[in-house]
Image 1: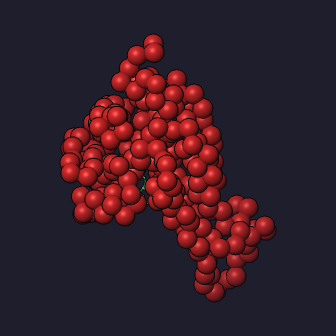
Image 2: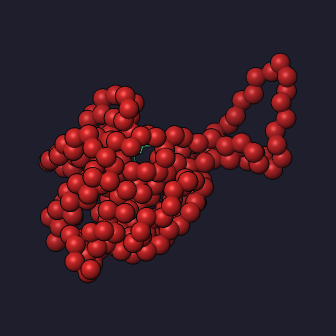
Length: 222
Ligand code: C5P
C-alpha cells in the first residue's frame, strides 16, 4: 500500500443521477445507475488515490477504500458538495448524470390530479457543475462524461471545449451499453488526442480510463 499509479492524489468523483422534487412523492430523475462512477471511485482507490465520492440517489454500497462518501439528491446539493470537495481535489471526475432542469417550485403538498385537464410544469435551468468549476481561477483537472445516443464524437468534443474540460469520456448509450448495464465502451478525448477503450466491464474500463487520466494529468500539471 502507498504505491499505485494515483498514490498521493486526491480524486473527487461524482456518480449517479439527480432527483429533482416536484412534490413530496414525485420527482424528475434519469436512468443513471451510478455504476460507472462507483467503478471509477473503486479503481482510483485501488490505484492509491484518496477518493471522495459524491453520490446521487443510487442503491450501491460504498466501494472499499473510498475515503469519504457524500450522499446528495438534487443537482443543487450535488453542486454544493462538489464545490466544497473540489477545493482539496487534484482531479475531479464527473460521472454523474446531473439533471439539466428542476421544477421552478417544489410543492410542499402532493399535487392533486385535475381530471380531464393537462398539467404544465415550469422548469428552471440547473447550474452546470463542471462549467462553474472550470470558470474558477484554480480548479482540479476536470474530466467530464458525455452519454450520447448519436454523433458521440461530435457532441463530446463540443462539450470538452464549451465546458473548459481537460478530458471527456464519451459513451454511446443504448444497444445494451451505458445506463443500467454492466458493460460500457468509452472514447476519451482531450485537446489534441483521443483514446478508444473498447467494450468491457465497467471495472476494467475504469482502470483504463484512470491510467489515461493519470498520464494526461501529469503531462498537464507535472
Ligand atoms: O449532461 P451533459 O451531457 O452536459 O453532461 C456532460 C458532463 O457535464 C458530465 O460529466 C456531467 O456530470 C456534467 N454536468 C455537470 N452539471 C450539469 C450537467 C452536466 O457538471 N448541470
